[in-house]
Image (cartoon, rainbow, N blue to C red; front, side, top):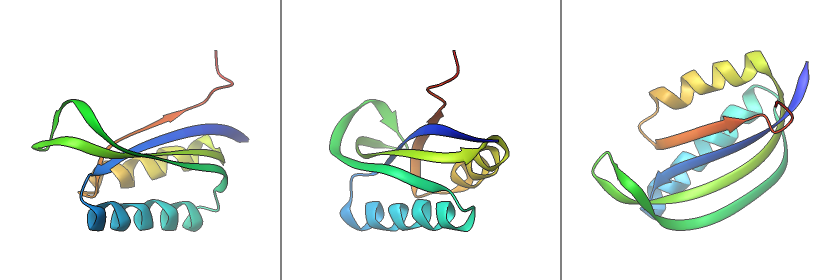
Length: 95
C-alpha cells in the first residue's frame, strides 16, 4: 500500500560528497519507483554530536510516496552507504 513518508538525510558537509550522496539517494528512489513530492535542501548545519568524525552535515529533506516494503529495502541500502551519515524515514500519517 502506497503511503506518504518524510525522509531526512544527512551527508558529509563536503560539497562533492554531498553531491555523490544525493545522486545515490535519488537513483535509489528512481530504482524503486518512489515518487518525490517535495525536495528541500536545508544546507549545512552543526550536528548535535560527532558522526564519523564530522561536526557538520548537509541536510536534505524529501516528501515521498512509497510502500512499506520499499522503505525497508531502501533503509538497508542507506545503512550500508558510506555517503550517508544519518537518515530517517517518518510516516506522518501513523499515530
